[in-house]
Image (tube, rainbow, N blue to C red; front, side, top):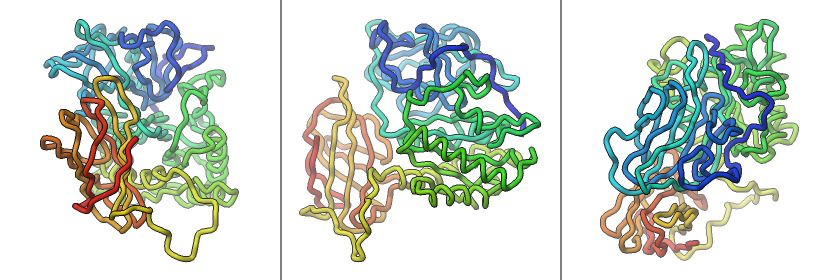
Length: 463
């Protein structure tokens, strides 16, 4: 695969500030400047210059809420980017200076925005530098609803989205994160190997630890800036053509998993079989070695048969259909592993596990997790005493409250009657198991009542 090198967008010898960091002292919450504490910068960003933030690697993006009817982006020089407003499809923009992301004005009210810049790489030398937002007179930003987890996707040009229609945005990593309602970032560059080789294959074994991946060893990323809940690795496609032996690949994969574990002690690590099957046995053996060493939170993901016959744009890179097919397979794998909040340490009983202590067929926890005055986020967890294959949850909302957005379920509303239908990846609830989804409402009112799962009444708790 063709190497796509990063452009020189690194500020040398600086402390690189990343996602979920406390706002700088001079930030004015709500003003749309780069240091506005309401803007979440997901992934690896250089935030040392308060007036210009620079994203690194392929999957960095920003998320923010805003009021009013329009939003504009302040850019230094020409750049290609993609923006999504209120969860709608990403739209491509290109330009410099002030870029209007709302050529057609929105309805007045609260909105959410995601912006992803095109990766500066190869022959593309755009200027991925965020200089702030311009809002309507009197409008302000607000913190976008929190997402429950963060995923890293580590790989090469496939994970960077090469040959897909919108690059990183239409890649399986970005799409899987969005489908699950998680934050996510792609640590990927075209042409990357796992192993650093004598013929200069850039390799994740040395570059993953850097802020931008293409600079000197002093350009190290500060891993305290965010904590990944899951790290998904797709490496090995390029190593074969660079002469890496099976034994060397397996040994280096074990070391790579071990070092990532040291950075993220509580993360689930997923080692994917490359889609064309290179080093599949060695990848699986590396996972088994880590399991044997006592790390039970490392998993091998067998991708055999995931890509449809027309899912490639060439002999290696998935097209949009291929990336969607991967997403549809990968999302439930990650959800099943990451949805578990704790792992029992006691010996499993020989009898069937007990079902939740509920007075009905199901129990619901309806929890407000964020409140910004004019709206709120609610996370919903449903547990079932008996197996469920496909579910619909119904309940009654407080009068005057409207659901404006949801994830991990399809919601609808008639008056105060609300309805949520499972997504494809969380349709099955085992006996004693759970399914979860989230929603945003246009008021902070609590007090939802009358929950029922597939028409069976549920007990409910809220907080």
